[in-house]
Image 1 (cartoon, rainbow, N blue to C red):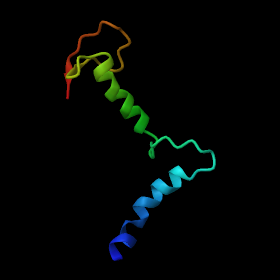
Image 2: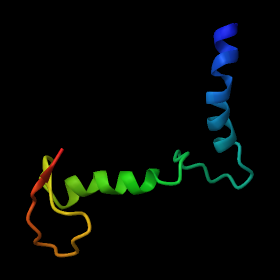
Image 3: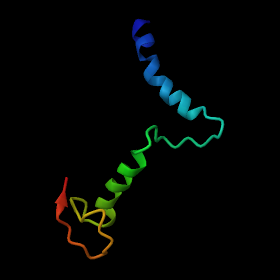
Amino acid sequence: MIVLCALLPYYAVYVAHFARPTGGATGFIQDDMPYYLANAREIFERGNGITYPNPFDSDGAAPAIYFH
């Protein structure tokens, strides 16, 4: 019982997010989460899955020099 009470503040964030009156729950509970997801997708869209080019370079033929 004490453990459930201790976890209540953490779960309250998700309950508040999904119970919004607008009904637009996205799963992003922080403002910068879509940005990081977009950068992660760059690895597969512009790179080969391991290396990727500079995400701020708009050139389609930019060299893939970064890796995770």
